[in-house]
Structure formats: C-alpha cells, structure tokens
Length: 335
Figure 1 (cartoon, rainbow, N blue to C red):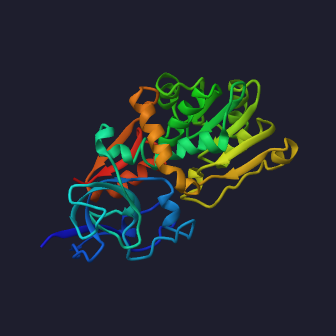
Figure 2: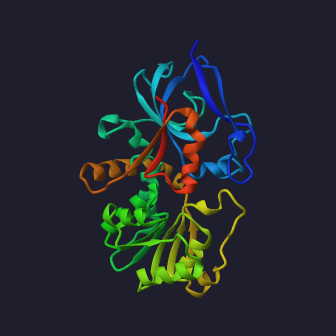
Figure 3: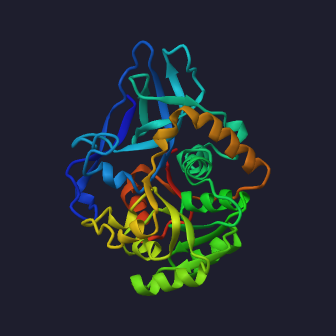
C-alpha cells in the first residue's frame, strides 16, 4: 500500500503560525477514476500569501480545517485514466502540500516542458507564478518607460528581483527596498537595480528620507510587496499621477493590519493605488511563460531558488518568508 503524507491544517493560527496548528498525516493514496490522473509531487512552492489562505476567504476560499495546505506544485504523472495526461508527463498546477495528488477533479493542471528549463523547479520560480507575477506586473500593470523611477519593496524577493530586471529592460530607473546590506548588495550587483535601500532599523521618517535620497526626482511607479511603514514612507515620495501597484503586504500577514497613514498623498498627487492578482491574466499565462523562458535562455534574466527538503520541513521553510532568511524563490523538494 502506497501512503500519502499530507500537511494538514488543524487550527487557524493566531499571529505567527505554530507547529500545533498543523499535523503531518498519512493516508492511503486513493485510486483514480475515469478522466483522472495520479501525480507524484516533486516540488512545492512556499509563498507568503499562503498565510492569508490560512485565516480568511480571499480570491479563493480559506483552507478548511482538516484539509492539506493549498500550494502550487510541480510533479510527474504516475498513473492516468485521462486522455490528455500520460504516464511520465510533467504537470504544474495549484494543488496541495502532499506527496500524491489526484488531477482531473475540477482542479487545473497544465503540461510543462522540462527540457526548456534547467530544472522542473523553474516552473515554480522564474517560469511559474513568481516569474509570471513579475512579467504581467511590468508589461500590463506598471508599463515603465525611460525617464521614470520605479520603486520596488521586497525587491530582493522572488518576484521583486525579476520585476526590477524587466523594468530596467524598458529603460526605467529601478530602486529597490530590502532588508540588510547583503540583500541590498545583491539588488545592485546581481539583479541590476540602480540603487538599493536598507529598511532595517528605520522608522517612517528615516525610511522616507532614504527613499528621497535614492530617488531625487521622486517616484513615478511603485511595486508594493510589504505594506506598513514601508508603504507610508513610499507615499511620502510619490510624484503627481504616480501609480502604486499592490502585489502583497507581507508585513501584516502575521499581525493586525497596519493599513496606511499617508493616503492623503494619493489625493494630493492625483495618484492611483491598485491591487494586482496574477489570476487576472489567466488567459495570457502561456504567452508570458514563453517570453520569460526565452529571456532566461538568452541570459537576460537571472533568478535564484532556495530549496528546502522534506515534507516534514514545511513549517520551518514557511517561516523563512517572514524572518527574511530565504535566499531566492522558496520551495520544498519532496522527492
């Protein structure tokens, strides 16, 4: 009998998630039915927004108590009764943190060509939701151009690092906010940012002053991943008709919402603040993926992956997102 290990939610975390909020359970792998296929998951994506799924309905329902955590995965088909998916095929989709998943039950999986990338894990990083989030943020939402300044918070993160590279290709000046000298050095030396700002130890006033120094002509475009005082300090430096695209608010995921105390700047600068979800571009994902893979193949984009190992290490891997110790797109390798 083949057993399926599943990382299951048993209580909704209050504040920082604890080991007691989850259980690793084992159950027999279910048999597949007609038009279904069995996937052996190889890599699981660990993403900040998973924290929101643990506590509330978002653009998807909250993860139910007793269910395995939702996550993007890459795996290989091991058995199939589906005409489109054959044994040996590699697939990527929104699935669960578990060894084996069943496809064809209304969930959406896509075939991926692992010969086009250096590792199947790329379909969770640069060729997955990470790279695609960056691609559509730049090409569809921000549309930066020469003469503009784009400020990216969480810039050394998996998405922010690619946003900066794509925006620089379009001629914009790119300034990133990150935590610590090592990540700031990485922004300029590896990802091609024109300037980097270390937020560590700074309050709103000090961070606003650092942004003003790095952006002497003000900020035209913002790609926001952090929220809190980072967003407030940014708003104090925006130009007239600025566009602020909000992709995430990681500073608030484990605490009460801070919100923003500088909304008056949106009024005074006739600016726009807009939420951004990759799901809005579902019909274009294939087009974006092909473009990203071509840029990587041509050496125009660099990316980093941080791979932890073993399903038993889901929680410590997840917590790396909030203490800033991950170095690249964070994921878990199951096999």
